[in-house]
Image (cartoon, rainbow, N blue to C red; front, side):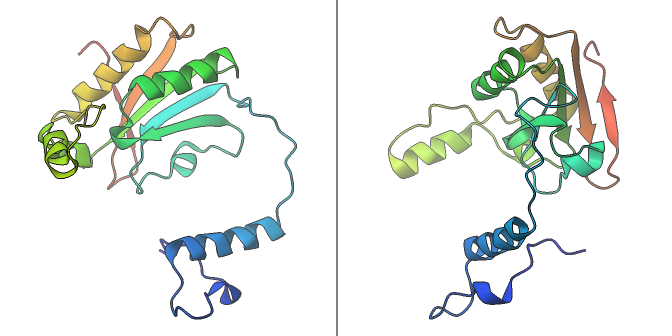
Length: 183
């Protein structure tokens, strides 16, 4: 299985030898754009669903959920945690762009399981300023999904809270396991 964008022959920088990762991705985009056809859709997701998931590179959400371009809004961050910025995106998604369903996806083997709030203190020591954001580390992925579901269901800015479900994606099997919000 290949895990990187193919490198077009004409994308290598002239004098620097190997192209940077960004150069490789821009070259891949040129190939994509050469065959691109505007699908003629607008920003409203066809399935009226917003998926909040971890940014982990092992999660291919469209493939795992059988989604096509235009089906959903995808909101990703470290851990798939429902933070203030996630609420901001969900609020815009629901109120301005018509989504009604929220799916939360965390996963096994998440990097946030090995971090603590000490990470923020270490950053403060290194750069002389404490980050304004919380790490949102966790030890129990199921409980963190429940917490994220609760944050969505209790937020006053989100008008559509009837269809909020949470899952844990197994990075070894590709299967989703639904989390009971009341357990």
